[in-house]
Image (cartoon, rainbow, N blue to C red; front, top):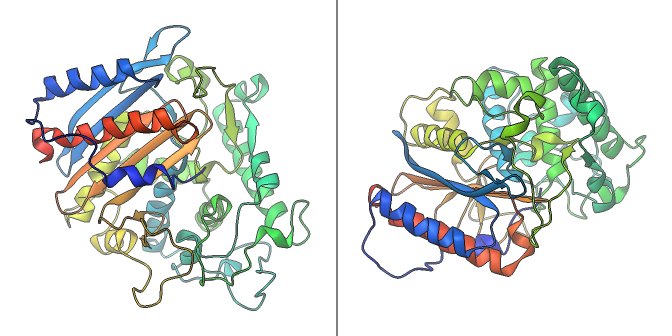
Length: 395
């Protein structure tokens, strides 16, 4: 689950002129033109505020081969936007008294994790959630977290799939982080001691979700279903492929148009959320409610302030921060222009979800192709993203 260092630069750069704000119908027409002229297989967008979804529409194809349209109900993986759900789940677990953000992870884990270059310094949950733990993604090991979706796995019933996913997550993390593990190496950690430098870490994020499993007694998939998806009526969201919805899933594509084989992720919480443009719009609208101090179905106002507030002291930030994202919430990126959200990228999938605290408007974009692998697609996304700002209600 990569972040988007190049694409993030586009999020605050005006790409369009100051044309008259279109009506929703006119916006759909303009987006349709951009979609037709683009190389995007399909995509869905939503514009939201704290009252709900102001605009949503989808374009192109979820499956080019079968001509299946991409719709607001098309299900696909969204990459690292998934990490924001770990953030919500962590704050819910704090509210439940399972731990605090400053709890050392070794007080929860059944195996000890020590940074090889600072073994006496505890790693905390907050450090996992701000990518400052010192745990990094060693490519040779992390790429093995991506596995083909097999017919045998798909044939398991729901309880068996969830039990398998829970076991695989625990096994991967133990192997990678415990000195006795098969894939453990000192190179699984950065040269920097915990809390001193920013290193984006998918494995660190998956570890945070695993801590929730250990303390709650629920799989992360079940925990998020109970405390996020069900309250928000995100009926088409989950973490594991469901054969009964086979005709609802988007096919992932390479930038050249070739379809990819379906895959799953052993460290699924770090980027394996399967959701729809509509459901993600519902989620972001609820985040805006909580951010504005309105009653929320997810968290208390204090928890929202912690989750979305800057975690790094301005006078002493960790090293290695991206200049466009100089601070971080709890698995929520805080951009220099004040926008808060996350990007997501995976083979054949890209997603963007950000909101502006000043305007109270949020935007969602999901597509079934990896944008960061193609400059032309990146520019096409940028035009679509900026056009969403012209919706009259988004002013």
